[in-house]
Length: 139
Image (tube, helix red, strand yellow):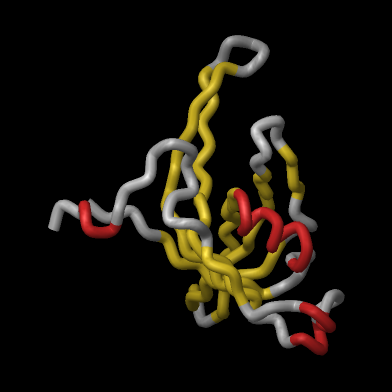
């Protein structure tokens, strides 16, 4: 089975980074992707919003370099979570757990252009305690 997402889009707002008690960091931000089509002779733009989650070294990278409006290339996998809200209703969210993030905004347009690296790969596994070695794939 394959669970892979590749997105090219713009950051919707500055990332929110939390530093957890277990010496872990997690960054959350939204990414907007656009799709265009023609309807009744007019070009229509449809924007889709994606929730991105980055852990550990990628969270630090996001905290240091990613800002609202930047163009990013994001690879990751889909994850759907559920919880019960304060009224007891079941709620769901779908998010992308990032494996790698590449900033595509030219350095001259970025706020931290002096020391911005090109990209940072995510560690082998972004989920705590569930590493799958590359040679242990089912195909």
